[in-house]
Length: 359
Ligand code: 5AD
Image (cartoon, rainbow, N blue to C red; front, side):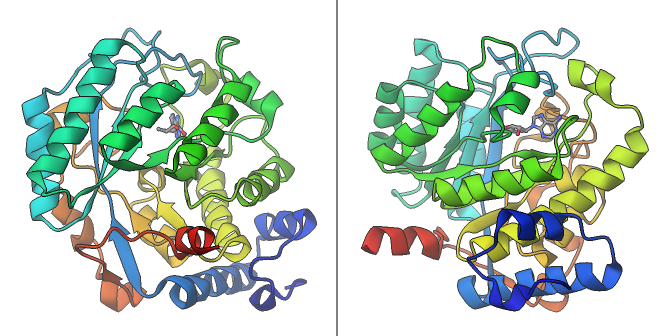
């Protein structure tokens, strides 16, 4: 290894990041993942935190070129879970001691939707004696709405920048979707007081290693508390899929790149929360486990009822099988294989967040 990664924690240049993302040799990759994994243990303990995610509707006003639930995809069945169904799932998450819930859906900005979310936040807080931590992943909203949801008790917000390269962002979205607006939303969320998470897709057509290194530096620059990033995965009913020449090569390449991104990020910002995202599992049966081994510390089990999952296909092969969330850990033994345990009943905020707020 040309870089002394063990002594680089918190401090990698763009060239060093590119070098890490270009690694191919097995021995060097092993060293990279091992260093990242060790940094996770040193900075965040042995605990893996859970966020039960409910994907409550695929109705979307956006038309992103990569996403299976984009507005123009007329081949899918649009659904909206009822409040009762969502609260039932939230109750399950609470009873199973996950401590944290993520509400995600297609993006909508109409008053009916906003009021629906207002009610959900209130009722989830109620049913859990205020204990369940609520993370929202509901896209771009105006300041008033973000503020209202925060006041009602949501404390984290996930909004991926998708790519920090504005040109690339514009290539994968229609002109009506604004990079500047997305950035501005991230700023507003931080101003309001949310713990802010962002992320990117890895291996997009036209994306270079330099872009990815810049994505990592972007996370550092905006001082995020959490990152969820995953491989770009094809969805055939989308315009971006047409740009892919060899799907097999793409899958292998993007999976490997995603693991390297996780490890490089853990070295660059050792004390943030990094999710082993669902998209990893779409490309490899033990994808999430390998994400954890590469330095991630968060898992977001999908709690969405199996009846709806087939309609929430942002990309292909997204956990179609009706596994219950509990089955997630039957695939591997966390303590044996990862020397880790689940942090039940804890919100699991990142030390990074606490440090920033104690200054
Ligand atoms: N491949 C990988 N990730 C995707 N997302 C949407 N479509 C895809 C795809 N084809 C991700 C986006 C979005 C998140 C909810 O899902 O990054 O922010």
